[in-house]
Length: 85
Image (tube, rainbow, N blue to C red):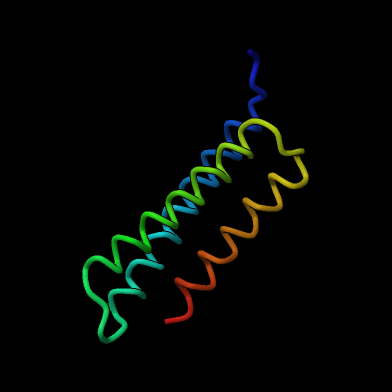
């Protein structure tokens, strides 16, 4: 099975950006009043599960425009979240 180079790069960028967004989601869950550690772990598991599915789709079946669109959207979200504070 031959994998194009752009798929590896896009999947890697998607994984890194998505991991940052998952950590932000976990931190926001932790900062809410009345939330316990189980809620934070649940948020992390859901976010990382969704990230794994999207990264797998980017690496295997999605067309290049959709893949790069998802990568761009995730990094735009990372930029907005990190610059918001």
